[in-house]
Image (tube, rainbow, N blue to C red; front, side, top):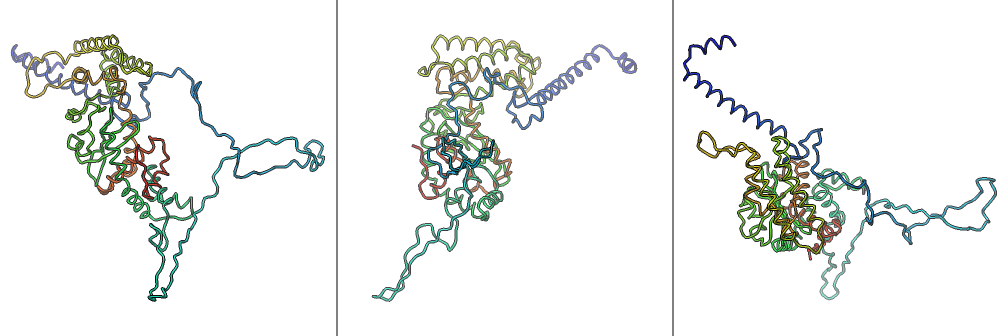
Length: 472
């Protein structure tokens, strides 16, 4: 330290000022880098869009309020439980032969009553073999040998039936078991282990029957009042592609495309013809579709606001969380016949929202003008970026207050896309684009069937018979 002081003594005032300015610039850069690294370390699934799998062993605090009720079924909930049937398939009568106290013979004593207990179980599973025989005759007129025709679908000497094929597709496309494990499960259940080719051929046969259901799903989504949208990365042929989802409470449609943005969304073909409202995050490509209205996912905003509260300790962010949660609760507790908050409550929420934004801009130092202009876009803090978005998209953020059909968040689409990420974790990549498209189409069909309250396995079986489920 003393050596450094001796080196600085001979310098004049201007030279010292230059050194100080240089050091201050270096410190500012280091401070910005330190802040960026601290921000990166501080992010988790509770205050950012990072997945829960990245949290490690430390579980972040949930955004949900602690429940006011104990775990389990609540008062008034109908519940589901096993109930005795009046006509069981089998009855085993257990007789009383001797008295357990005195060992007296009770064989001839009259029965005073019966106590019943029923066990619900499945019978031993075994494959049934059905043989089809066609008669062969010789025509007495022309002496030509003729035979009857086999039923449609009976094409080989030996083959598996449609019920087993439906189960193979169910395990692979719905429960996401790899091909080898599907064959292993069927072998354990039935004593017959099919090849992976059976699963692939059954998948292709099912996919060939889905043109009409998929066309109806797309048409109904385009006519829906509100559609939830999301996108995520998906590897196809070893390259990053993008899976797009458009869904409602009753419909789901998936599409995959090499591009994430507007071109990929147009290729899927829902947003470019939608006339209702699209719910999504703030990804800019969604706003290129001006034919529909928009609304933003407030779950994203709650996470980002929590990050600003925890990392930057700006009070406005915590107050904005309270405002959004309070507004959500008021909407949820409104009478079922009510379609919007009354004008006075809307005005109050909008005024509070504006005041909090103003407080946020005043609290964030990056909103102050820079002392030295640099070329290019000025780097902003996460708080300033969030404030700019909350200001720019205020109507889309608060749309759920003026139209109760608009959800507070985009959780519906995120739930629909979650299992596709599980598929990617299991398989890593789709080896062919056709395989990726086939999987997306079958999942669209399965998800729609499930949402509309039908049994998936039955819908797959009927589709293989040429009678697929079509949304009403």
